[in-house]
Length: 493
Image (cartoon, rainbow, N blue to C red):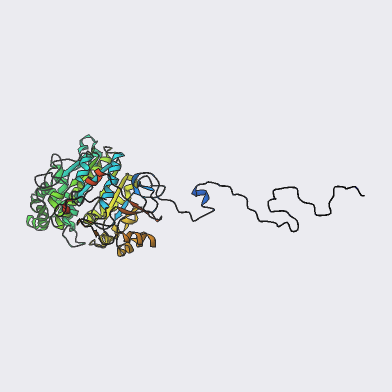
C-alpha cells in the first residue's frame, strides 16, 4: 500500500471561515457583492453643500427677537433686522404688509418692546390712532398728547441743536442757525403745499418771502419763533424784506404776499388752531426709552388735510429733535421707528415722502430700524405726483426684511414684482386671507391672525406664528373699540 501523503485528489479548500471582501475567487465559489458598513461624517452646510448642493437652511438664525414657532417644523424663529446687516441683509429696514386685522401692529409692538429692552429708543412720530400710547407708558416712556387743552407742539422748535447755539463760537453759531432756519423753511413749505394741486408749488417770490421772514423772526425773538411771529414779520415787513423782494410799493407788497399770509393765518385760526401755533408745552424727553406723539384725540375724526398737517408738524418736530441731538452728541442710542398706517404718512405731503426716502437710505449709517407698515402696495401708487411715486417705489426694495401677513392673490402679484415669491409661498399667504370664520359666540376672528411669512432678501420665506404673552394680549389689543359695542370677550393672537 502506498502511504497516505495527506493530499487529496479534490480541489484545495480555503481554510478561512469568513469570506473575503468580494467572495472566494475560484470557480463555483459564487463571487458575492458585499458592501461594508459606511462611515458617518458630520459637516456644516458650507462644506457638505459641495457634495449635495440642494440643501435648504432650516429657518432663520436663532438670534434677535423671538417671534414664535415655524408653521412647518415647529422650530422657534427670531427676527434681528440690525444684527443681520452685513451677513444676511444689507439694510435694517423692515416692510410689513397684510390685511387689516391680520396682526401687523402686534408684531411691530413685539419688535419695539424687545429692542427697547435691549437699549434702543423707540420713536413713534405721529400715532394717529393712539394705539402705541399704552405700550410706551408701560415701558416708562413719554407720551405727548397733541390736542386742544392738551399738549401743543411748535413745529419751528429748534430742539437740542438750537439750545446749544449760545455755547458755540460765532462762525459755528451762524452755520447752525442757518441749518435750523433751513429746516423750518422746509417744513412750512411742505405744510403750505397741503391742499394744493400736485406740482403747484409756492412761486419764487413767496418762497423767498417765507424764508426771509423766518430768519428775521428768529433774529428778533428770544427763544424759538412760532408761526404767529412769522406772520407778524410778513404783515409789517422791514426794509430788509422789501429789499429781498425788490418791492418799493406797499400796495404791490401786500398784493404779492396776501396768499402767503392767508395760508399761514389758516394754520393758526383754522382746524389746527391751538395745536401748532404757540411754544411747545411739553418738550420731548430724549432720555426716555420710548416716545410717542399721540394725535388720536384731535385728529381721529378730522378730514384728510388736517391729518396731513398734523403728521407733518409732529414729524418735523420729533424726528428733527432726535436727529439734531445726534449732531451735537446729545443722543447716541440707536432708534427704532414704527411707521404704522404708512398710507396716511405718505399722503401727508411731499415733505413726508422726501423724509422717508432719506430715512430708508441712511438708516444703516444712522443706526435706525424703520418699520413701514401698510395694507397694500397700491398705497404707494395713489400718491399724487410722479416724483413721489418714484421715490416711494424704492421703500420696499430697500427694506431687506419683508414680513407678509394674510394677503389676497392680486396683492401678492404686486409684491412678487418687487420681491419674487414661490408658488408655495403665494399659496400659503393667500390661504391665510380666507373669509373670516365666525364662532357660535359671535366673535369674528381673522383666520390668518398672527401668521407671517418672513423673507430676507430673495431667500426662501419662513412661515411663523406669533405667540403673545397674556400681558402682550392686553397691550397689543387693537379690537377694543369695535368689540366694546358688540361682544365683551377679548380676541388674541
